[in-house]
Image (cartoon, rainbow, N blue to C red):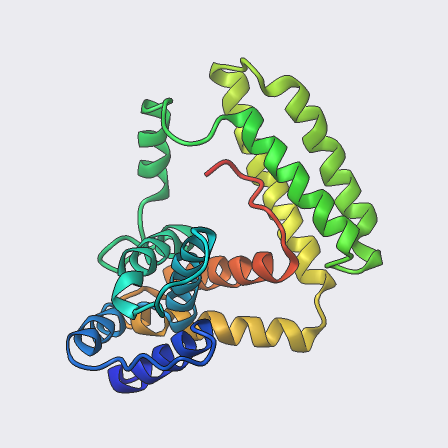
Length: 239
């Protein structure tokens, strides 16, 4: 997408968020948003950043003035960073080294959410997805099996250390793969095709820089993220 078209899409989306009040993306604002396009920020990622700012803004009480796109810059870039990490891209747009990242996390045990709290949130999200029937009734038995194992893991997670913790984290990663397999199998083929096209669109600015196998991994990760959003599914593996 050309920067000018990207800016028009952002302008239209911001207008909707402002209840029809049009704030033009021109001048310095145009340069700002064009910079997002040039950095490869996917349009839907930019939308989620705008959503994040607006949700925080609305919580402060009645709005006094329409949201300007400049106010959303930090949230858009934060969501972009989160998106890159989720699909395995570094800040330069190339595949990252997952093993190195894992090693750094292992050396910094104080970083990130606690394992029991993470499992609690995962189970709550799975219960919500189960109750809303996001994946259809056919997926319910498989979801129940994953939930039962996670519930057992939660009961033993507090205070686990060393090899026992590493083994539990590996099992959570395995369960995450199982959950996404269940989700993919539950989607109609036409819906899955739409999601995969969206993943291709998100990755288009980075494809030329990536080897075929790295692109395939990133494409799967991007599609999985879209499937999670659609079905309200959690990430079982600990971030």
